[in-house]
Image (spheres, rainbow, N blue to C red):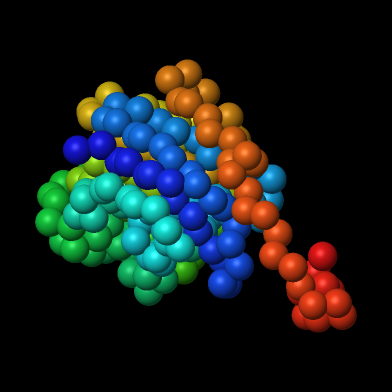
Length: 207
């Protein structure tokens, strides 16, 4: 089954941000969402992931085949790197965590408590969770935040491996990951018409 979005309209804080978005994501494919800050990339990903309802439209996607990685790293600070990955592997019913450790260059940090990691190391650990989910569709919101160039290259390699194994990735990122097969969807044409605010009202202060 493909990921399909048909005529989707979404809101943030009750205010429409995007309207009539349609897309299809097939196995082995990557789609990058682009657009100016605040246009609704995060809201779109969260909606597709099932974390909030759309205003209208349909999403065709088996929820048990989706892994979402947002701005938070999603790690438990008191657990070691290994314990964090084993926790998620148990949640998703997968097995060996060694490939995830190797893919994100975490083997040397395997027994270190997560709270002692640098911001970049925590991000690599958070992304390594994707590799133990066994999920086919990765929904990623700015996955390269806090990563240096070498770590970005590691992550790009992990994405390419995921695609070659029949996975698919929908992501919002301003970084060119060098994935030649990735397509780009500019969300600017889908920006919702601004709603009228009462003069002197709360919204006017943020116009």
